[in-house]
Amino acid sequence: MPKQPVSLLSLLLAFLKIGAFTFGGGYAILPAIQKEAIDNHKWVDQATFADILIITQSMPGQLALNSAIQIGIKMRGIPGGLIAAFGVTAPSVLIILTVAAFFFPIYRDNIYVQAAFYGLRPAVVAMIAGAAVRMGRDILCGRNAVILCAALLIAAVIFQIHPIAFLTAGGLLGLLVCKRKMV
Amino acid sequence: MMVVLLLSLYWTFFKIGLFTFGGGYAMIPLMKEEVITRHGWLTATEFLDVIAIAEMTPGPVSINAATFIGFQTAGVVGSLTATLGVITPSLVLLLLLSRILFRLIRNPRAENFLQGLRAAFVALIFLAAFSLGQLAIIDVPTIIIFISLFIANLFLSINPIYFITTGAILGLIFFPF
Image 1 (cartoon, rainbow over the protein chains, first blue to last red):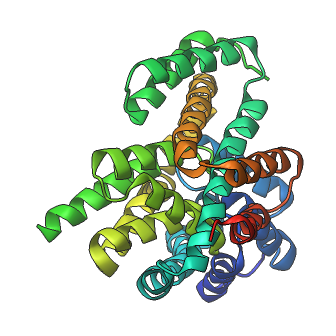
Image 2 (tube, helix red, strand yellow):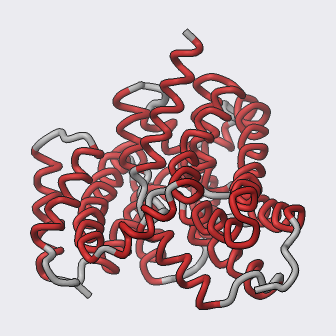
């Protein structure tokens, strides 16, 4: 931990940089935050960052956003958390607004853009399916968890349940089924 | 009318932010259900395109998607509203309720709840991939693109931007012009 308090401006600049230049979503942004906060600025050490990650993964919300807010809070309390959230979010908003407002309407009917999206769509589905498999590989270690997931999958196919109700049911079943830690 | 739409955008993305655990694609099933099925703000194909754009631009995917969908629905104000909605749960939990949150997470039962929740997420994300896949995987080239990128994604731990870019390039090569 630094002896002098970190300035809000340097927090802001660090997270703006991460938000503006890191491609590839949350799993790519986390290492960027790690590099910036641990290696470049020495704001937190490895152990603290590991704690932050545990909390990030056990709570709702974006991985990158949750980690950024926690580092901001550790450095400068609530204002630091807000600045970090703003920094990691604002570039996205500006870039997406530019794309949505100016480029997308013009290029949408362009045949080459159509062709690119023709290939992008199966690529996105491959990423989503891959995420399901990866997530399953990481978490479905116990027999109970595999059975629970299979049962939930069948239930989801048969009944049209809203995802929120479905997730809540999954969590509650987890309380009943997962008596021991399934690691 | 505009106020109702903005409130609806805010509430929808608030829910998406609140029920996204573990990041990555965990927000896809709920976003799909709310944005396509419930509100009809986008068609399923447009939704896929938005996710592709969100992946190709810097920043967190769900924040990018919220901004884009908000803009399509209600302009600049809509984009800010949706983005604010999706980040509100994180802000409230970490800035105001962190003590309660941390105590909850340390509870051993929380781990069991999360295990069940994650099992449910795996099922939901798999189903979302299946239903979106029917719109995206429509002929031989798209089948090849899907299978090759799916396998590559499972075995290579590289930034997803490379897979997405590969998809775009393959699309330009194989598109039936």
